[in-house]
Length: 272
Image 1 (cartoon, rainbow, N blue to C red):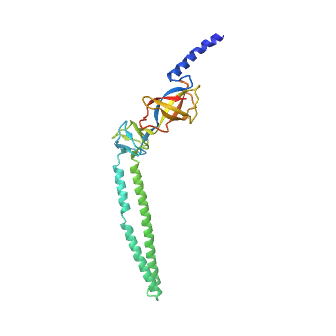
Image 2: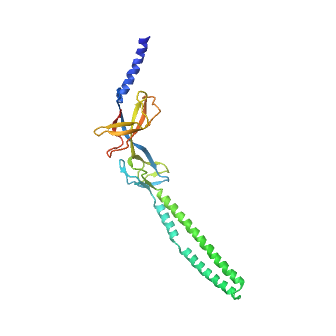
């Protein structure tokens, strides 16, 4: 019975050893795991509005800085609307005329009040009419100032509508894929570009479900081919084990990332 049980276990032991050999795991106190560097996120970038792509000054594989213009929708109508709103905001002729009228009405009322106080050289009805004229000019100035504030908001709305037709890089990265090209129409939130975010580069490897335990914050070493070893620190160890391979993902951060580091570089994760 014992020999039969051993024969039944041998194929599984051989398969487990083969998996260990494939990923480069040593059975000693130090083990190496093969993995690769990758960007912290793959971002699918889209416009929040629909339109036709008018310009795209970047190509696949281009390294871009944060804030760089990546693509623009056709925006001639929005530019005209913004210019129109700005002209309306800058036109102060109506407000200036109302201010001048307010000043004249106030002076006329003050003069009428003095005449009335000196002995009735002006009737009370005329005095009340002068006061009403002055009050109406005050109301008109207030209305025009409110209209000016609304025109400023309309101008800002037009500026935002124009800005939403320009796509900027949210972070430094590499254009990994161009999905839509100039001349093509796109719907709102339809992906146009894919950006590999390199504001941070992580190292990813796979750990066997049993035999090697890592905790977040543990120090490790990354050995890239032809390069000096880099110190790393465990950021994440997946609690989920892949049923097919029996492995779980581990991610390593590099506090001091060298200038030559790029996504996709293979290396060995050395566990001491």
